Structure formats: structure tokens, C-alpha cells
Length: 473
Image (cartoon, rainbow, N blue to C red; front, side, top):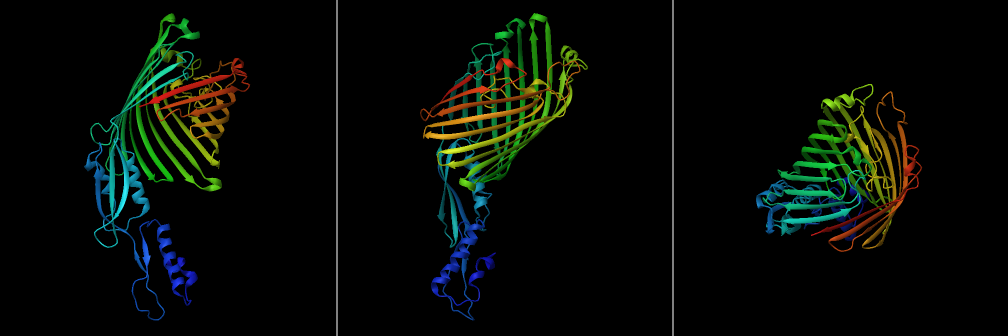
């Protein structure tokens, strides 16, 4: 390592200035390899046979201390600090990982301070704490809903930050619509375990609905209950590169009642999902960030009597039993100038069989293809390509132009009696604006227009405007 760094000076007669260059090259090499506290210097010495001694202080960990107060118990924070190597050279990747993991804990704002230790060449790591708010509220109103269950939606979200001083976060949220009588409730908890980034999570949700609009005559209503338990671990955690593994088990109960036809459709599902997600930032061509996510899901769908009768082949889609699917997304955000950036992404899903509607790929709505209504573009398999150009017109205002294209395979195995094309091509173009009205309030709007869609000609040329207002405190 050091031989390569000093090769160009080897075998030469050097003056004092050139010796300093050698010392700087040695120190630079150490810092390049992550020894960010390393210092190289020329100690007092007598030169023998032309050999020069360069002393190196690699920067060892001295003490770890906490200053200030926060909602997190000191022993929780020390779990992370205790993973820093004692009496060894401190390297940037190790320190950076632990500090970033600490900053992910709820209930504190943490700043790192490095101070000279009591022993020569040692450095003390000091965490300066500030107490974070116990509660964070967020209210949102938007028109992102489905016409069948209510377009206009109103939601509220409450975060409790470390109420038990463990760095945990508890979340409660509720969402209602003005038509269709959709009510959705969600409780979630996240608990850090140990001092190396492991997290446990649990989520319970319940939704009730009744269909309105064009579906009022069906007199349809239903409930959906679900429970999810998960564990996650950051394989790589740094400022510029991250890789996380998450595994989640879930169980759902769904019940649909159609009073007009005296039909009750019940189903239960359970499954396991493993997700690998990553992001990496670089300085290539002005800098940018690449994100990727790969998820594999395996599950089992059990149907009630009436649901099983409608699902049975050859007339039914045969969704019951075990199923599997794989999803993949890849996205690049490229900076073109300080105020202009380009974003290109591709995502898709591949299914092992015909899927229940709750497992299908769904592309309609402002977060995916804003040219189509929420709930549109459902398919077992398919892919989506998204392109957008973002201009930071003002510090508080960003304007984007977007274009999307999707190819869908509606059913993995179409039923023999199907009369519609199993393939569907979707496209749209649009403009969006995101305005940070104040520190607490934000407004987002998207206008989009779909391309020609032979499967649903009624959507051709139909403009859509999406609005969202959020306020947090």
C-alpha cells in the first residue's frame, strides 16, 4: 500500500520540501483507505544509510461519551457506541455506519464530535444529543382515491417518537373518503434491537368500504384485516452506499358482501416477502443517485365456499392455492445542473400464476401513471418505464415534466372464455409541481393525459388533475 504511494520518490536524493511531499502522500493514502484520523509526520531522527523514518498515528479510539439529553435511554445509545473498536485505529466506514444508525433512532437529534483523547494519538467520540418531539402529526387531503370507493380522501398520521426510551417509533394513521364510505386504520411499531441496525416491526390494519358511484347498484361492502411482522438489517450503511435486507410475514382476511345478489366472498391469505433494496450516490457526469429493489414473495390463498366456486376453472381464474411473484425496480436520478435533474426508472412484476386482485400489479394513480385513475392498470405481470425532468424553479418550488409507458399481461393464464385482449399497453404524459408552502405545509399537483388505449377507449385523451395538500406539526 505505502510502497505504491511513495514509489516515485524511491532511490532519489530529496530536499526537505520533497520529504514533506512524501509524508503527505503517506497520510493521503491512509485517509483514502478509511483511516480518516491518520496523521503522518517526520519524528526527530538521525539518518542512517539514506533511510528516512516516517511516523504514523492511525488515530485510535479513546473514550466514548454522551452529552446533552434525549428521549433515548443512554444504554441504548451505548449499544451502538460499544461496537466501535477499542484500542484500534478508527476507520471512516465503521464510525459512519454507527453514527448513521444512531440518527435513525426516534426521539433524538444527534451530532458527532471528535475530541482529542487523554492518550497520545487517541480520539474521543462524543455524541451531542438534543431531544426530539414526542409527537409528530401530519394531515393530508387529496383526490387520489378510486371513483368506486371515494376520490377525495382525508388522512391523519401520528408518530410517537421513543415513548418508552428505546429509540422505537409508534405510528397510528386513519384515512376516510367523502364517497364510497372507505375507512382505513393502521397501527405500526418499529423497535431497534442491539446496536448494529437490526429492527423489528409489526403492522396491523383494518379497512371497511362500501362501493359508490357506478357500482352503487351492487350494494357492495366489505372489510380487510391484515397483520404483518417484519425484521430488517442494513448490510451496508454509509452516506454514499446502502444495502438493506427485509423479511416480512403477513396474514390477511378479506370479506366482500354483495347485497343485491346475496353473495358473500371470503378469502384468507398468508405469505412471506424478502426484499433487498439499495442506493448509491456518485459524482459521474455531475452526480446522481441509483436505486434498486428486488423482492420475492411466496404465499397461499384460501377461498370461502362462494369465492371458490367463482374461482374454479375452467370458467374461473384459478387463483386459489400457493402463488409466487417477483418484483424489480431500477431508478437513476442524474443531475444535469444545480437546478435541473433527469430521472429514469423501470419497474416490473412477474407472477407464477393468476393472482388475486390484492396481489396484482396496479399502475393507475399519481404515484405511478397519473394519466389513469387509481385502480386502473391491474395485471399479473408487466413492466413500467418512467421518465421525468425536474426543474428547481425556486428553493420552494419544483416543476417536472413526465412521460410513462407500460406493457401489461393481464392474466398469467387467461380463462378459455375470455373475449378481451390479454395484453394492454398504457402511456401518458404530464406536468407536476411541488410547492413547499412553509416549513409545515406543502402542496403537490399533477396534470396528466393518457395515450391511446384500445382496451379502454373512454380514457383516450381524458385529462386528469391530481391535488394533494399536507400539513405537519
